Image (tube, rainbow, N blue to C red; front, side, top):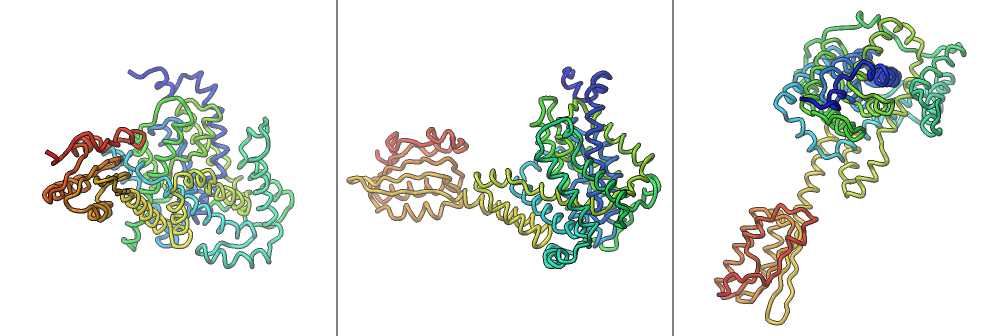
Length: 512
């Protein structure tokens, strides 16, 4: 039977919903609405596809997800990936890839492997998001300046000086004003005014300024109403590229959603996340969104944090934000055509810049994982998203192997006894270094072997045992703790290192 707190996390009483979740849902709706449009713009997709994803994410994941306070919808972290797929496959086939990726997510959630995704190095995830943020900034700056984005990061950089030299007056001013409002909203002291979401203020202010100015700038184009914009996906003509798109979307969307779920858990004291249930719900939402012509969906930490900060207590706040978005787009969607594209581009420049998180960089630097982050960012920006992720994984694995191979072997002679101290991680990677150091010990000598290892695998165990046996056969003597005792403690944590370190005179092997 669920506790009262767990029940509250699911639906809550009517009084709780009216007092907490309705106000929170309105805040999240006002944050999500301009972001859904902006992410669609950055993805090279119809604006309505972002709104469809926002509605589906709010309703489906809100109702069936395993993290009650997590808010889902289209995310900036997938915008660059989707843009590339649309260029290669076309929009209809990309929607089919989104639906197929959702099916994979449901399978993964059904077989309960969600926690395995948390094994992905955070340095790779943060590097991927930072690289995407840089790509978004480079591309959307061209729209802010009144031009059009180029096909890749290098082309955007190459054309940027010319774009700056040939500013398109009104469009540039509106875009820069939008960025200025967002920056001001972020640094201004807390007040009642700041409770209004910054993205909403920036988009409304930019749209009103454009209308009052009477300037001729490109605005949001909607092909029709929400229901008229629903379109079925189409089968691809390039199946290899389609398969790559499906698995890429499933991997990245799952990782981002699960990491957002874990981060959301840290922001409140209510029910804990059911990650497998959440992954299944994300798959349901992506399948439905793709079938309706919407963008891919993930859990979004920015909207979730806004939900919790605004007082959201149950999953009803996420569901209601989807309801408000559905009602607004259905009844008042025509007014979205008043929003200038350069205003949305300014919003995206700010969002993209925030994906390069200085706190994450400092944290990774302290942990010694900055190299993984830098390589991932360089790969995402310089090559493509998948290459950046692959390079980041490769560096993370290489770094792990390097750490596993960091065994220190010190040999010194005290009188007639050679003292050998082995510390660090004695694994198969460090066996060659261990063997080389032990080979310098004279045959037939007396040896005190001190094992201060915090990791010992089977290869290291056998290497030590073999050397001890061979040394005794030459008439030598070895004093050490029995290897079996060290082996039983091979899983000790660094904090128990003193317990792993043993006295070299506890027992004698081969001395009798």
